[in-house]
Image 1 (cartoon, rainbow, N blue to C red):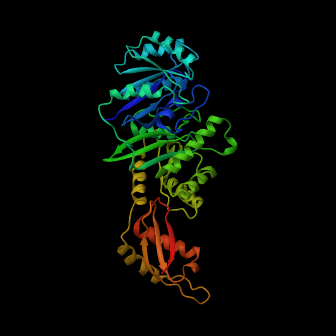
Image 2: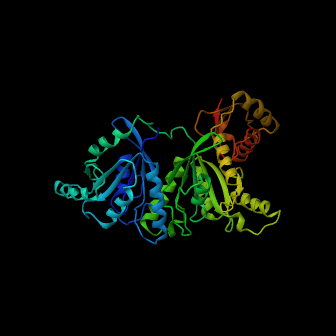
Length: 437
């Protein structure tokens, strides 16, 4: 059974700082500007030998017409539904506000255990101010004064929280599960794609570029296969990144790229493959990631039966040597081919983790080499005797030969193409290394 804690409260009380303290890493973006956290954000924590998931949420504001605040309210309600325990964070320095009272009234209908967490109590004098929050009238639970920045007071709170968990939970429920990241420029439909897959609003979607700020992780199951999908902030050129929050969002997206197994890079069909997309693809290849190019907004293109082939051919030309990357045309709005896109990403993951038996590799590749041997260098003949796939996380093939230093790039490409033709490594960068026999 999952043990889940939701961190909720009005804007700017230090929820994300508290979240980062519990999960022991800087996962959520922190800033003194209210409204930085917009989506539900997950991490894993442990206390007293029990493991649990933590959900960070955006600041809850009642009665606002702001499009983001209305969406944040939806996200907070979903987090409360998912959780076993709710931590209602308030601010000792600001004291009891009308927003706190309004939110407490909303929480009263919840049957979950609720703890009031009075943050920013980083001295005995400030801790005394926490008593005011008993006025919220949320059950018999104590108010816990804490300082999220230093961690002071969090131990006593967690001792109470874990009493509600019947079992130990899992240390990391995500270990060994394929990680798929959704990346691309701002406003290409990344969050809409995730929401369409899940059938619920997991990420906030608006027409404004930059809506998603954090990397949002979601566990997903398709055809009996578990995997984790991460929606990320839109990545654009450094020169266009103006504010601190966007800078951290982009950095978080790049870190997600490094931690993922497969990247679904979404591009806008109305704009085609642009330089920024190509840079992102190059970064994925450099980091040995599986890659799928998903051309979204296909419904907005005027087309005939040749349009798809024509655009695909143009894109493959721009990719140059990386024509092994699969391209799929979708419309998230029309729910066209979105399931095929995720199936393709899972297939790429399988290719990335595939191990070719050594005997099969030699039976197929040695005749290919005999048919077209490496060119001689200064009168010296190169003989490749044996091939094996190395036990690495990404496909790496070792070719044992007499003169490895004389094998040049064109022949390297020939061998890579033969491996791809015979063993299907679509969507995966492969490396070839030469060792002296």
